[in-house]
View 1 (tube, rainbow, N blue to C red):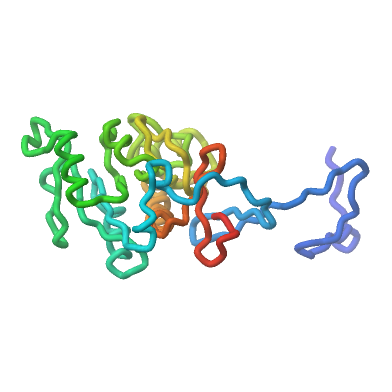
View 2: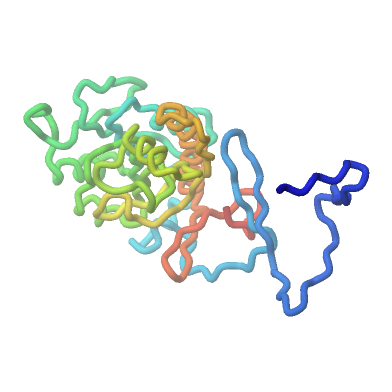
Length: 284
């Protein structure tokens, strides 16, 4: 037999204060800082106020390779690799043209020979294959990137594994965007709608894009930035994909802008962090 609910007038009232004062529980240890979540459109960004300053190793993405002190303030030269529709390429290229990103796309590398040659950007087909006999070899690709004096390589939906020679040529200078919260739902075979189908089928409550540095394997490089997108109970892979793509375009531009402004620093344990443009003591 269920107990009858008390009339509304007899129910204890709860405070509606967003920050009620609480007496500490016996034996409890006060937390030095808390977690605050802020909604940004369809994504949620988590910020940690009053964070202790991380122990940093370097203040430049290219420092390990010797760096380029003379070019620290100049506009960076970017090569973008694409395979799909190119929406992430346009999301980077348009802010660069508008001055929001301190860099210029000087080469577009694709494994699709039919990719449009537009905006006056040189197009390089890579790799060479039966379907793309005009494609270049790895040494030819490296030579072309050197000729264009490329500073950073950006993968924007490029589905091929990056050659180890390219990773060694550009240490800590290659970024990729992946449509899940890595390390979940990453690796060979996880791309495009396949990622979102796997997320929905798993019952995961959250997803979102990850910007990470590239190493010799699929989706295993160090994470630079993420955005969190809720997965709703009635979501379809297509609906989830659209919301994640919206966040991809924003977070990738923010990461590329930081890269071009030398605002990426490396912790002693090899984790990259983004310095805030407005406050260099804050890490995003």
